Amino acid sequence: MGFNVNSPVLYVLAGLIVAAVLAQSVYFLVKAWRRGLELGMSRDKLKRIAVTSAVFTVAPAVAIVISVITLAKDLGVPLPWLRLSVVGSMSYETIAATNAESAMGLTFGQVSSLTASQYVTIVCVMTVSIMVGIWLVPVVGKKLQNGMISMENRDKKWSDIFSSSMFIGMISAFLGYVFCDFSNVFAGDMSGLVPPLVMLVSALVMCLAGLAVKKLKWPWISDYALPVSLIAGMAAAIPITAWLG
Image: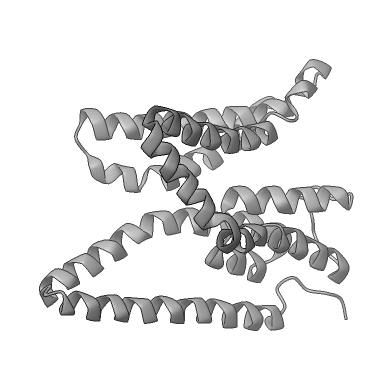
């Protein structure tokens, strides 16, 4: 019997973990509701807050669903569903899965089946690495936060520069992945242009959303800017890839 990335056993294991996460969410929702009542907030106000939060949760959820569909082609549904329901992200999971498959001589998006050994390897790459952040938070989180507060108290300007530099450094790591095959263009392989052009389309959509918020005074668009830009980029990838061959 061959290994199946959509095995019912995997659905059960992933479902149990997701159920535990959902149980935690319900627990803290109830605690927050009771605490709100203790603070004197009316039930109507609490209901409005809950409904508003639920509505604006739909927008980010669209991006998550798209991510699951993207990864499910190679990895099946249970693993992407689990990863993106707990602590994963579209950018990290895709890069981790792609790198793991590349190391095994596979091409992301073109894998018809995986062996159990290959699947376990990909799972380890996708989960163990990102857990480092979880382990580091209790160890260095408080010291780092105190250091940032101390720097801000001494010189707010340099504190802002330092924070912005860290953010730009993180973005640069992902930009390297986008442009890593760009040099192939000089060898006649135009596929290296696909990721930059897709990124450009997503960036333009995000800029248009920003203009709509600023010029048209539509602040609600900011909650939908990310999923819409993701969908636009993915949709644009199809004609761009066909155009560049």
